[in-house]
Length: 268
Image 1 (spheres, one colour):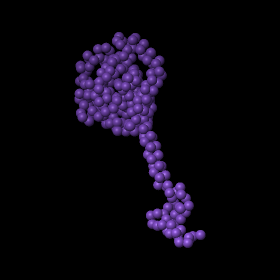
Image 2 (tube, one colour):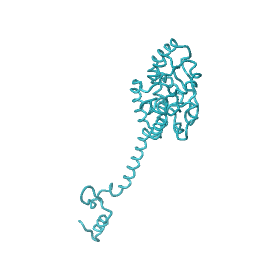
Image 3 (cartoon, rainbow, N blue to C red):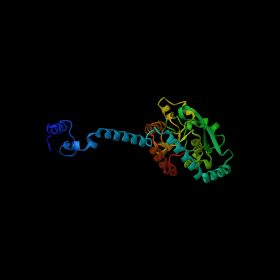
Image 4 (tube, rainbow, N blue to C red):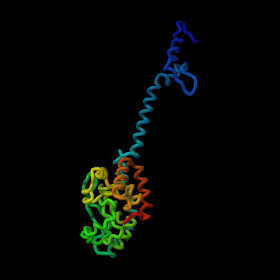
């Protein structure tokens, strides 16, 4: 059985058992049986290539949810997330509107120019938390700025803030109208906070990296201390987010925002 008339069978087996041609799997050389398994011997390499292609394709599809090659998915998250928030928070909108009107004269919504993606200006919406002459009084308060770097203006006991405004700022309720900014595409749910034009005028080239993506309602430093974090550290955290942004990271930041807002730490 092992030898033909001309010994061709033995020659064939010798070729299979030649160095570099064997097939081992956790034990002895099983190459003598390879000629009886055509699906392994004849097309093993093609199967391996097909598997490699499928694996690469699967990895790319998974990465869509985890790396920054997913602007479409991020936009859908922004649309559905902001719509859900607006519907859920509608009773809060109504209560705040009544309280603001009773507390001080002025409009319900404060509209301000902020700088967005790649330096593009847009109108930024907030519930009004200050008296109507707040912008005119800002220059007189600059010397009382409590921000360590001086780029942004922060003051814990700002006299321009109304009684209602102090409460809604502490729990970031004044930021709720920005869900409409998200729907309009000027902002995202997660991203660096949008700066004022006067702040951008003081930016270094490194600071400009914050404007490489859409600004957001919440971000890493918003859940890590908010206004207690100096501007330079905010820039570092924003760049860290930009480098590693992704779907699941956004979801995690959104969930961490809830307890950060309820705690009210660093909000003024």
